[in-house]
Image (cartoon, rainbow, N blue to C red; front, top):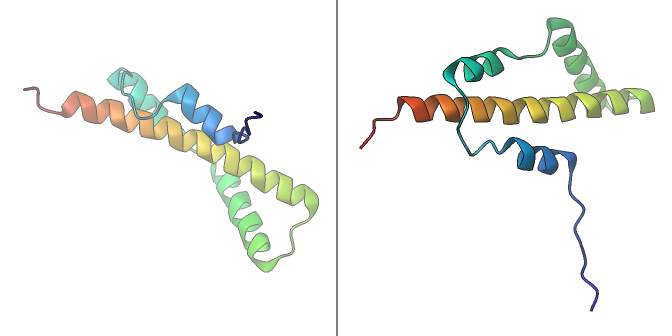
Length: 95
């Protein structure tokens, strides 16, 4: 019998690596990760690409560029989630 394997997305692989549901970062590391963000010019570019996407006028290169921003944003979100989880864990009262 042949088993069908569902292909993983890049985000699913990163989720397995980062394990955002687990804490374990020092408070200093967590705070540093929460400071990571897109530069103003990148945010402006993402907004421009998103607008062009809504209008249906993205070129192939722009579509690839937008996809890259989305991938980086996904990983950044996972890192932020892990950092917040680590900080929340440290502030929870112990029983």
